[in-house]
Image (tube, rainbow, N blue to C red; front, side, top):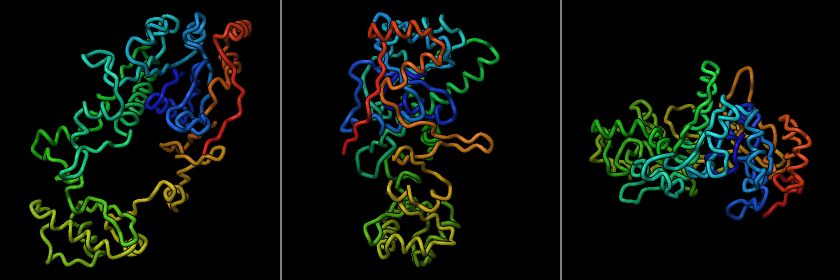
Length: 382
């Protein structure tokens, strides 16, 4: 079960739901809203594949609703600052007392303890604190925020999902639940583990945009084509680089050595000039059958209809919304998107009854305002 939040918590729950878990989302009974201009819960892809129960966690009976669900749950996901769940009466101690086998997953920016544990922030703050943001960006330019991929999703939600799966495996042996402290600052650092190593062995220059895979190398970068589109070059190994030069009609003898970093700016200018002479599609035709590691930089719209993606069913359409299909792929038990994102409280009554909470209590909670059933139709925005 998931205590509704934004970003990494929902991403973690989405991953587990995609893989077949029966995840219920606890949404707020009053004042549920989405950030930004998107006011349609049906379009919140991170919430796909699960049912929603609307609970007023401030209501005296709201705690009992959650604890009633906890009794039958394998795991709980929450993404509040440290101490909030305890103040609501549904912290780890209360939940593990109700269900000693529960895996209690806590998702925060800076962790459950330490000097920054109560500090507010967003993805960029956690990635900055981890040291990873200092590595991202072009030469002479400020550090570049990597969307919400490194903190919220990779270092947050995905790390927590991994932890929950590991703990669920362990509880089969011990019979005892436990608390998982998943901090995005820790997870972001974990994603950057290789580069922490490189930095301490002298294989990484602290100056951004001067290294092998940070846009410093001319054979590992994105270049603009004649039609204003882009291609990505990843010809790291010499034999791939040789194929790249052949595709670009460049004479190796007239160029600096591939790994002469002092002349990388010069070589980058030559490659950029060559690539700018043709359209992106022309380069894709020229590279076919070659091992040049040259790929189109597709837009989201293009990626959805790309022949390779279509052949692999890499995207699925759920009630008119195209979205990435579940990953990874299983040979015997394929993952699937079972349901679109729910409206808050859309499944309150049916879920509570499915989880064997007494019908009389469900009726009492509804009448008291501790829970809410929402049967609204989605309101699409443009």
